[in-house]
Image 1 (cartoon, rainbow, N blue to C red):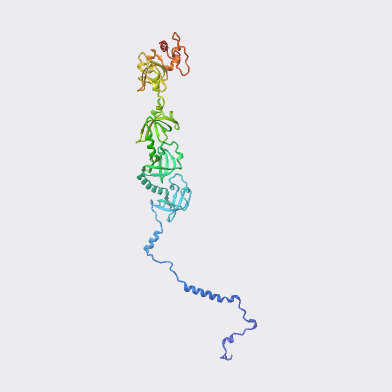
Image 2 (tube, rainbow, N blue to C red):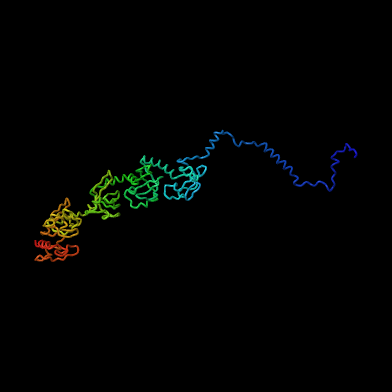
Length: 466
C-alpha cells in the first residue's frame, strides 16, 4: 500500500461522490418540523424560568396539636347525651342519622314520636336535621341507638315547667281519645280530662282529634311523667269579662229559657246562653225523681227559674219545678178536710200506709186510722197497690203533709169534687142505691168485687143523703 498524500483529507477519500441516481431527495413537509420543535422548546424554557414552586403543606403542628386535631374531627358520644344529625335513610322500622360518628346512628320507629304507631316518613324527611338522645352507645349488633322522642321530651319538659311557673298557656294538637279524656301533643303527652275540655261537659270527644287546642297546665309531675291540662281554665280566663257581665245581669227569681247541655246523677246543667246553671235533682219536678234522665234529656228546651247566683264561685242554681204548677198548692185549693178521696196504697211502713191521692201527692194513713178495731201491722188491713176510699183529716201545706183515715171514711163524708160526677147525690136513688156506672179511669162501683166493701157502700149512701 502506497503512502497517503498528506494533502488529501480522510473525508474526501471516504465519501464517494454521488451518482445521478443517488442524489438527495427534496425535503418533504415533515422535514420542515425542526423550526416548530425549536419554538416549543423555547416556550418550555420560558415557562421553566417563570414557574416558582409553591408550598403545599406546612408542618406547623407538633405532636400534641396534631392529636388534638385528630380528636376534633371524630365525634365522641356517651349514653344520655344529646346529639344532632342529618337523616340519611328512612325505613319502615327505623331511621338512620349521620352524626359524624364512625357509623350512623339508628332511631327505632318507636323512638321517633310520642304518637303511637307513627309512620317514620310522616315524622322526618331525608336531609332533615334532628336532635336525638343517645340510648345505647353500642347494642349487641354494634349499632348506636338514638331516640328523637326522648330528646324532644327532655326539651319539652324544660319549656313546660317554665310555662307552668309563669302561669302561661301551652298549645298542641289532639292526637288521640283515651278513657276519660284526650291526649295533646305539647312536645310530650299531655292529658286533657273530658270535664276540662270545654266550659260545659262534652259528650263526644272524637271531633277534637287533629285540632289544635290551647290549655293551662294544672298539674305537673316529671317523676310520674304526668301532665294534666285544662282548656276550660283557659276559656274561663279569656271569657272572664263576658261571664262577669252575664252574672251581673242575672237576678234570682227571673225566669229564663235554656237548653239542657248535660244530665248527671245529681241533676241537669242548663245552657242559659252565656253560662251553664245547675238544676238539682230535687228541683226537677214536684214528684219524686229517681234519675234526672227520666225528666229531661240533652237538647231539651226548658224554662227555668233562677234560684241563686254566686258571682265569686261563678255558680248558678236553677229550678225547673218552680215554673210548673205546684201540685200541693193545687190540691189544697181544690180539697177540704173531711172530704172523701179515692187513692192507691203505695207503701207500707210499721206506723201506717202511704196512699197516693193525686198527681205527686201522697198522704199518710196512720195505723190508728186504719180500722175501728186494733191493728197490729198495716198488712192486716191493706196491701201495696190496693185502691180504696180515704178521708182527709188534715192538710199541712207548709210541711207538705196530708193525714188520711180509712176508719173515718167508713163514717161518711162529702165526696171530693173530682168524684162528684160519678158519686154525687145524683148517682143514688131515693133509697140510697147506687145508680152510676164506673168508667175507665174512675173508681169502681161501690159494692162490686173491685170496689168498696159493703160498709163503704152504706157510708157512701149516707154521704149521698147527708
